[in-house]
Amino acid sequence: MARIYRDDEIDLRVLSGRTIGVIGYGNQGRAQALNLRDSGFQPWVANRDDEYRREAVRDGFTVHPIARVAEEADLLLILLPDEIQPQVYAEQIEPHLRAGDVLCFASGYNVHYGTIEPPAGVGVIMVAPRMIGSAVRDLYTKRLGFPCLVAAMEDDGPLLPIALAVARAIGGTRLGAFQSSFREEVLIDLFAEQMLWPGIIKLCLLYFEKLVESGCDPEIVATELHLSGEFVEIAKAMITHGFFGQLKLHSQTSQYGQLSRMDRMMTPELLARVDEVVDEIASGRFHAEWVAEQKAGKPKMNALWQQALEHPLAKSEAKLEALRKIAAESCGGAV
Image 1: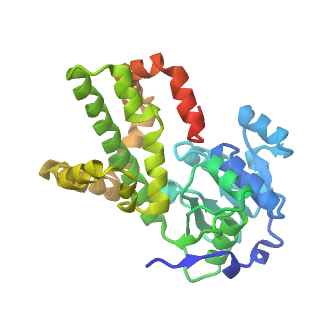
Image 2: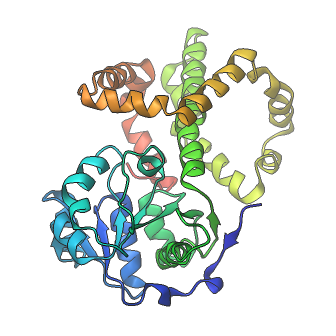
Image 3: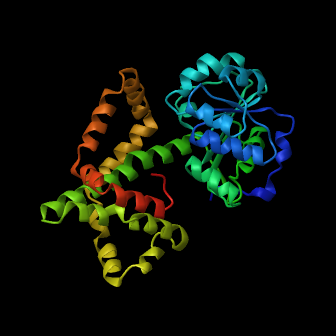
């Protein structure tokens, strides 16, 4: 089992004397900057001139250019989207790095694939909350925890304590921080994004299409599928009761139907697709494809978005916008 670290094992004094910079004030950037401040640190915040910058100012931060923070700070939390990190790093961060500086990433993506290669003498760590940014902040203020992965390029050296201290400062060790690696984080994260969630989405679309073909009202199907919020409540029950334990909250008809039909989903073709996705991620083929897509102006991504928005389920959602808002609010989600 992975080594798990909690608050009482971690010394925040490891960060004493360091100047902490938060690069990017988006979802994770805002949450982590605020949590760091509430933990007694005074992070420098860097962001371009946009709405995120204005939000940081409203939150009481002085916002600086990225290059200025890269020059002043010796512990930089890189909280920019994966796809823009390499260019920003090359142009505004790397020229200001000095020996002894430490770069902290919230994802293993660019380090694992070599898109960002810090110079010798610069430490590289990862503190990756397994939670969306708004929840990282919300759970911190409620003195609750969230899962977090931590890693250092020198696992047994002086860098891991710094990663753990950052994790504690943002609230990531109240529940427990798992010692991991950049590679492991990438495999787990991308596999969920490319196999688990797409699989759920595709099954939901099939559910919608088949029931509508069978004469069911599309708005009623959409409501039953996800707009009622039951889907979210089942997911919450998995956290508190366990993956299978939550089944006992359903009728016995439901329990039998789910357990007896589960193996029908494991077709040979699906299992082959699972292996294919893992291989694409591990080999770097997906990374190369995504880099090429970005350079081309994202034509495939734009076409896929257009296709998704034209699906009949999306049109049914539009008719039920008021109900969707109610469901999102009742489940604690953003609309």
